[in-house]
Image (cartoon, rainbow, N blue to C red; front, side, top):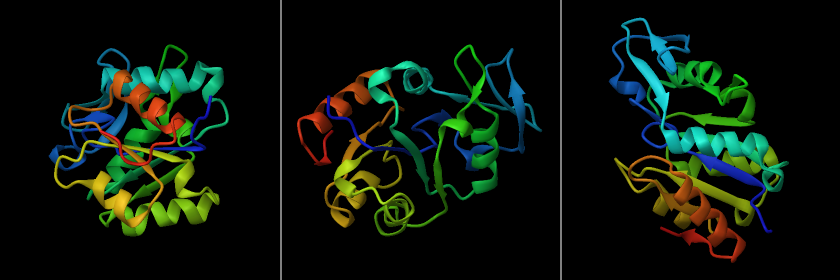
Length: 182
């Protein structure tokens, strides 16, 4: 099957909750009993169940081997986001999410005018070979990316990443559809 060369995920409200700006404390370490990264104030940052399942598939699904993974986030708390990426565990084997993410673009700028051009430059991967997932809660990042970076396939995840949305995105990508898919 035709799969993207680069999967790009937003972080806050797409892969995990709560959002970084909502935290009162600084993320510190993985808490297996609570299933997330504990903060200095006792909060816990957790992957959505769908995101956990998708990243588990990225570890085990032979058709997705070789696909690079990136994050593109407009978080104003980049250090918190990096810490969560480095501490969150995926699956029973304890693989750190950060080890699965090849590229990180985490800063408060336009994803279409900053994050995606930086990803293309860093990887040499054409926009037509990228699939992007974003919750689009505060602004329509999917439309921004689709307009500024023609060829990227974009999927809105308004309630966080789910396996269904991931599969719909992969299927649409394989069919050659680009732009905002759903």
